[in-house]
Length: 266
Image 1 (cartoon, helix red, strand yellow):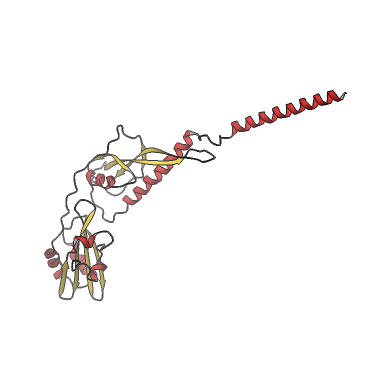
Image 2 (tube, helix red, strand yellow):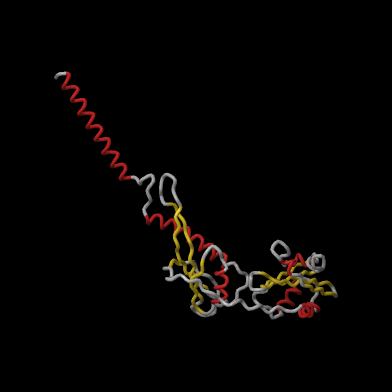
């Protein structure tokens, strides 16, 4: 074999190696996702759906928290859900939670996920709708449903102002009560209080503090009635609106025990 044959054979071998290497790289590129390309659309959707469902589950957990079990109308539920910022209420059906079918609300929730790129992945968002069924005793887990088309946010009439006893009515109800917590609670339980009124009672040093917090104004604000029951004496007062703004009084019985809110701020 001549030197020329060796050189030619070496060049052929080098070419074959280069071709084999290139073919291997093509196979590898086909087996792996592109560094800058999108992931499988179904994977992106699944990630975004999981994100949206987590938010819907969180909302349901909040809605299961109320301490007062009462019949809620479709309007009551609609107003509650429409006020939430993390989801959009797009449909409500049913009459109230006392009906066997209950009330069903549909929330539109935006989920997010990455586009699957290896380098500099970008976030994508997708909308999902979940049905929430309310009954007299529970709120069902969110169920994925098709979003209505067109998507329209329903509106509701303002919530009626709750029936709240006057200071004189409260004073008369508590006048015959002894200054102990069970007796004061029993006296308040005999009053025809609206279910939206939150009653708080606390006792300290032979004094019982009372706080009745109720919705007011239809804008998420609240009103408050304070009272203190001592042996032979009942005090009742109403804090001013400025004393009930966020960051001020929370309308708790411990605040009434301390005498907060008796005088408007000077």
